[in-house]
Length: 377
Image (cartoon, rainbow, N blue to C red; front, top):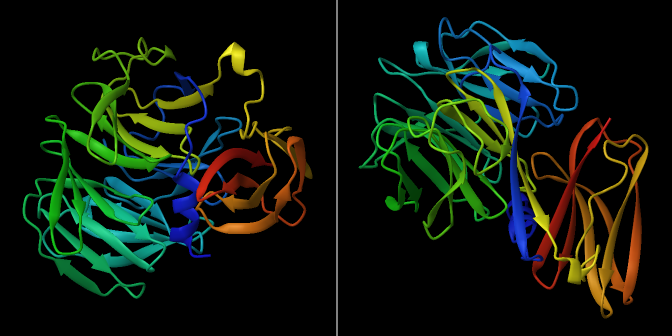
């Protein structure tokens, strides 16, 4: 199965419950070395760039402990980040008009050099094995081959593009930093998806929705595939306040990334340099009971070492395909494909041979899918 087909199934989530709760927590306190773009690596860790000040580093964050460590240095205002299929990180070096390739372990080199411009955004297209990059002051998008050869894409309407994200159909979306317009690239041009009318830091996609940071409004926006805009979190007042999304406060949110399951977002506050986590949790009503028909419960234990378990319930016999994916959406293990009888089920998942990191269990049924994530230590 291709990555596109996998992600299409993974992200075509079936609404299963009556309500959601959205909460915000600070996982890295203010004053960190991250104030800009974010990416989740194949090891399940969070990676963030430093744009302000000298902006020389990319930092790794252990999401279990919150401990940070310098991953790569030598940048001049590090900006957009994206991982390739081999675990290499492609990072926009804004001040020098470069894309730097950072190998696993942190050694980096110039992958692409632009002339007379800044580079802001980068997104690796895993399906087609090409890389899209954005120039902030050049107002252009280019496609790079894996050898670094560039093809410029003729597009109008770009004003300081920075945020780049693919949806589950592998369509590229571009967010203008300067005016908050978000476009869908159709292959021959751009169509306007949404207009946030404020500066937008970066763009993320997960769980069938887009998410964008409003730098000057101090809000996190959710944008549906049809372009409907709602406020996901924030009061609109600058601050550093955790808690329910409606009362939480951000201070110039900038970088944003979603996990594969779409139930957890990470945001960098550029003013405070704190890292925030937004958890979107499905809540079922008391009448539905603790395990709703067809629903997957979160894996337990989580984090896991050698094995974990996941539960689900069926009200009638049904054919299910269960699979395990890594943090980049790649299918790493089949968990079985068969007709399951009605009733409660517990699936044991052997983790031997898997590297530490973030994983997602998916249950494919009737062209739909549900997913739950866990961390393997």
